[in-house]
Image (cartoon, rainbow, N blue to C red):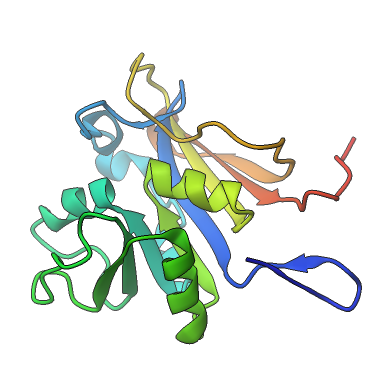
Length: 196
């Protein structure tokens, strides 16, 4: 899924970017998909950088569970963005009226091929399994993780099994309101040496 520059460094066809909230113990939602512990902070979080981040991406890729959750919101949260849903079961089931400019794709290869064909390079990747798939494929380059000061014990994890270590460069950490902290990382290539 990657090409190579003249210097031999791999260049992914798309740059996956993650902007996500987790519990302190690493879950993005409860087992039933609820993230009440995250939204409870509301305006107390202050400026999170989400609007600026959202404006910087060309498209979104979400999994079926994330798509089902946001489809139930009063307002479509991805207005103005191209949305690709990674789902084998939803391929023919997207409602163009309630989810504009949205298509479903059965495989990660299908998603990447569509993004490349449409010239979309910087992509917001959301949903636990979808993030994990992009990470295993070497397509995530940026991670912004906002941690809530709560342990929920069990739920849907942000990360899962990997084929090899994924090395990160810490870009920065800041404190938000209500005791939340936000850390940003650059995902280093497989041949990049770890920083001391």
